[in-house]
Image (tube, rainbow over all chains, first blue to last red; front, side, top):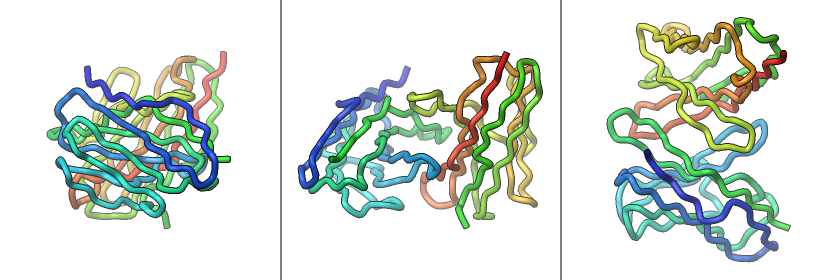
Length: 112
Length: 110
């Protein structure tokens, strides 16, 4: 079974804090994604990566950055958290042939 | 216009009912289509892929209509355990980017 592990299930941070969300996968997938999910808006793509040290902006990259130093690890960084970044963050890996996404359990971030 | 649109519901149906969801997409060059299921406070998981000829998996049937740019999901003989949010997902032409609809909530009641 594909295992996608997100480091924190629940976080509470203050405005202006730097936030790291880590994602680790054990299936050797090249493609990894970060989404945020908000009621009524569905999943929106923040950043994605097709290879180590490679990153591409998704639909809503503003206020975020990412790091992919190793194939199995894809980190999402909020340099200075703001209240409008309160959300559920979902990391996913993608199987090459089918395109199926495998998600982590999600990290629910609250910014006060 | 959103790239992928779904009726948010909720659809409230009794056990044993048949229920259908539709999803429309705006990019005519979209290549692949999926339905994902998301339980409350859980991550999305693939329910089924949608093939051009339509496909069935037990009580679930998925259909694609390229001319009208919509996909559908039919659930027969609904079970309480089918209660979830169903996400329509479209793979756009370029790269591996998948676009998600906002989801349709299904509540099956006894």
